[in-house]
Image 1 (tube, rainbow, N blue to C red):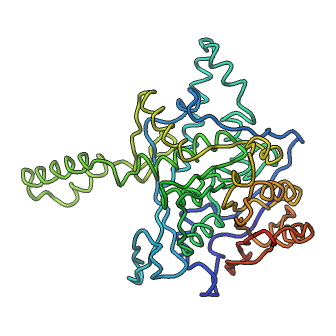
Image 2 (cartoon, rainbow, N blue to C red):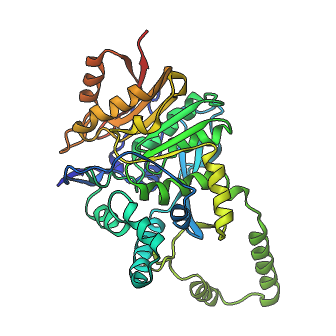
Image 3 (cartoon, rainbow, N blue to C red):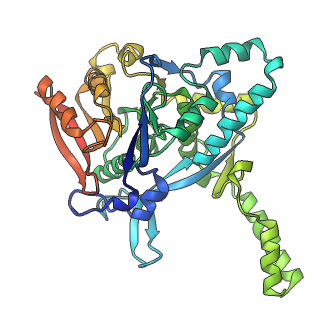
Length: 418
C-alpha cells in the first residue's frame, strides 16, 4: 500500500501567466486532495470494456428519488475572458473572482446509497426475482458494498476500483483551462477517459447543446451513481432551473410566523432553531447542502435517460478493447477532443491509455492530459508518459498549463504531426 503525504494546503501557485488562481479552501472543499492517497494492487483480472445502457431497468432503478448535491466553484485562469458563469466574493478580502459553476452529487450521498442498496438487496435475498438475479450476475467488477469497502481502505485498487468516486485536483485544472480557451464546441465530438465525477466533460455539455460528449470510467457503479447524476444535475434537471414554489412557500410561512409570534427571547429562538434543524447526520442519510427530487416513475426516468443518450454515451471497463467497443466507421467518426485527468498514476497503464487516445482521436483533433508530474510510490509520472508518446513519433506534445505546488500539476496537449 502506498500513501501520498501531502494536502490541498500544499497546492501553492506561482506563475500568473500559466496557472490557475484556485483558492486553497475551494480546492480542499471541491476535490479530495491526494492526502493519504493509498494504492493497492489486486489480481490481474480486469473489467472488460463495454457500453453501459443507461436506459436499462437496473440503471434507472439505481437513480435515487432525491439527489443531495453541492456546487463546484472553479476560478477561471484569466479574468475578463467571458468564460465565467458566476462571480464569487472572497469573504476575507471582499475580492471578486470569476468562476465556473458545476453541480456535483455529494459523495456521502453516494456512499449512503451504496450501503443502503446493498442492505435492501440482502434483506430481500429470498424474494429476488429472476431479473434481479441476472442483473446482479451481469454487473462487471466489484459489487456496491465491496467497492465501498475498497474505497474506504484504499483510494485506488488497480484493476478493481480506480478512484472514480472522488473528484481530483487535476480535473478542476482541466475545467479551468477549458473555460479559459472559451472554444465553440457546437457539433464537436468529445470523449472523457477515466471520467469519475466528469466535471470537464460536463462543462462542455453546458457550453453546447449540439456537442456529443461521451464518458468512460472503469467502474459501472461510478457511472450510474456519480457520472449520470452529475450529468442530469447540469443539464435536464438543473437545480437553478427548477420552479421556486417551495422557496416561496417557505418564505411566506416565515413572514407569517414573524408577524404572529412577535419578538421572543433570543435564547429561546436559538433553542427552537436547534430543535427544528438538528445537526446533519450522514449516517442517517441526512446531508449538509441542498437536494433535488428526481422523477419517481420509471417512464419519467426513461425519458430523462433518452435525452441524456441523445448527447452522451457511457462506457465502462478497461481501456484495452475500448476502441473495438466504440467501433469507429472511419476517421470522421472519431473524437475532436479527448480529455483525461489523474489517469497516469500507474506506469503500467500508460500504453493502454496512449493507444486508446491515438486510435480514438480524429486527425486535426487534440487530446488534453491533466496530471501531476509524479505520483509517489506508484511509479507513474508525466515524464514517462511523454517519453512513450515521443518514442512513437505520432504526436506533437506541449505543456499548455502548469501549476507549481508540492507536486507540480500540468496539462499536456497532444496533436497529430503533419
